[in-house]
Length: 428
Image (cartoon, rainbow, N blue to C red; front, side, top):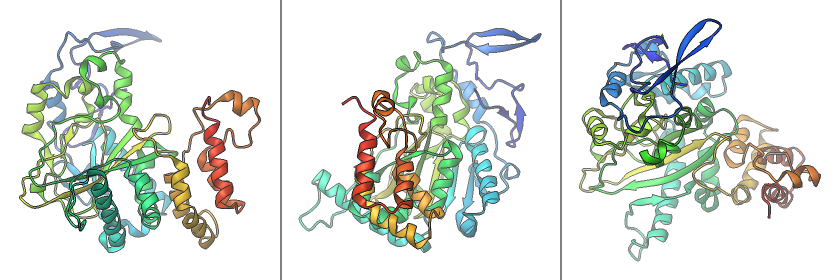
């Protein structure tokens, strides 16, 4: 399950090179198949053997080469930078998109583990959407924290959970334009395949906001080591392949405002979920992380297993605006419950109008359908679905949306079908 080791210029050296700490000192068991003997690591990590920071260092002590990532505009601090403004006319070029997705996949899987997409939401194209979304988020923060002045003009810092759903309900036009971005769909599909599930949170860090410790993210990243150790090694490795972490800068993020810190290549350290809270690993992270300033509209996406953490905002008067994106495979549980019915209710009229304007399922219609609705039919109450013969039982929410558009259903018909579909997933 571990990614292949790499040489220092980013080239693949296969699985027979140095182990880079993947076994982490734990027992390997000899297996034989057709006369060939190979070593398989033990099922679980041995809690009596501490992960070694030297093994992490052997993985991270390498240099990213531009030759390995030819579509990147540059390599900065070991991180490939992609200028999305140069790809504006290529978002529907299948051959090019697949080539780009393959390169991004290599970065996240067996490369530095993080990509910067300059101009993902370029203000030249998305200024209105960025500003409108910021206004909604500020209002949500004011209402949720009750820290604003009476005029409602004070800048507020903090976290807005489930900003995906809240933006849809508060400002459907902005939501539709924002989440129809083709490159957001492509980068999500690159790591997770179709039927991914988007969630988002707003994080506005005020002046003097402290740095986060270096850590790994959802799913396994939320567990302490004593809980992690109970999960097999293969599950700990697989966890990183079911989520994609990202963020969009909703304002400039200069270096002193504390943009995210990364430890490139650290996602390949197999024992990382066991190790990232240990003090020696925290010390190594602080001494070796890299961080890049971002401009308004830039995006950053990364393997959730890379060691990372928000930086310290050392400014005196600058608020750092980030829109955090967590994208999940349809095969796992997202961190937040979205409520597709409410989102579709808010966006239906715009979605239907686009379908008519584009004479069917254009790319932008498909991107929106993928964003707002579930693409997987399970879990479900099979007694209801199979035994009850329900019309919408085995269809996904995305199937229902596509059918409703094709057959020109009303909003009420569509919402009723989605509600019935959701009812078939429970025992109630």
